[in-house]
Length: 346
Image (cartoon, rainbow, N blue to C red; front, top):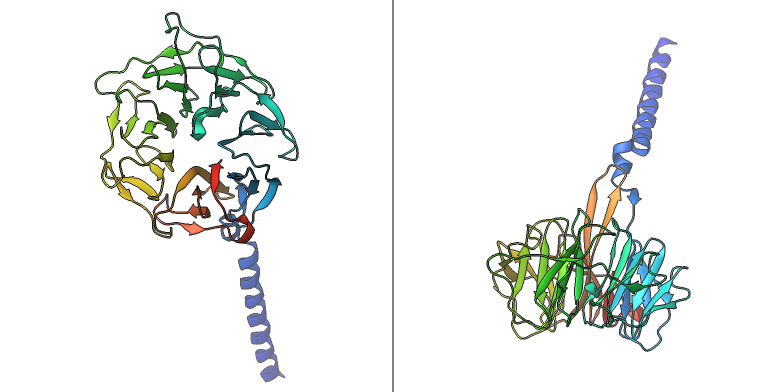
């Protein structure tokens, strides 16, 4: 009886241990926390025919708004509202099922940052043909008015061409016509010029702003004047080394995956270039040769263990690509009917 009892006890113990180990794999919070997304991203892109698509994981795309024959040059979300810029600026309150005109006097530029939502100020800003060149919305893009809050002495002939904001929610606007940067410290403040010291980008018709939490960037769309950055809110500007970034080709889009001098530029017919040790290097692993990059967006997933993963999306002439290593390598995310030329991404 004892001889039969001991093996039974050992067998029961092994079963219990196996059950406990299996239970641990299923219930350990540390195992699940890096797989369960607490704050997912939402990525939108539109192609040259105006078709608007969306994904929350970068792998499964859905159609949001059908093609209408009009290319989209910018996409934006403000709260629950979705905006896109075609001939005019349109807004949707039902995730793209229907769009209504929001502003019809937009001054068009070929870059994403001509329209901008500043979360901290809860304002949508767009370039405009009216007033001093800025229209503003205080109702998340439903309606717009001329922004009349300016310091005295602003030139009578004036325009604004792009916007960006820093992590402290200070808004910045840049005028190519006047070669001046302006700042707006809060929603009720005036726009006032930033006095630059030392070197500053030369006059040119096609610089556009972009930013991360602590750095502003100016990129020359024409591919001539270089890429500049400032880490003190526009007072001192420095130029990145040209490196492999080609001249005389459109630098269509730009983004900063992380803080500081992390920076990517998407070009016409030459792919992507990233800043490495202060100078641009080609960053086209995973891309086809001579690809055109028309749009770029940075997205983040925050997991239950508060780990943040950064993804960079690019809209190209061959579909949507994504990078999980800040733009060093790329994977194609679209296929079949979702391939095409994507002119806007957000």
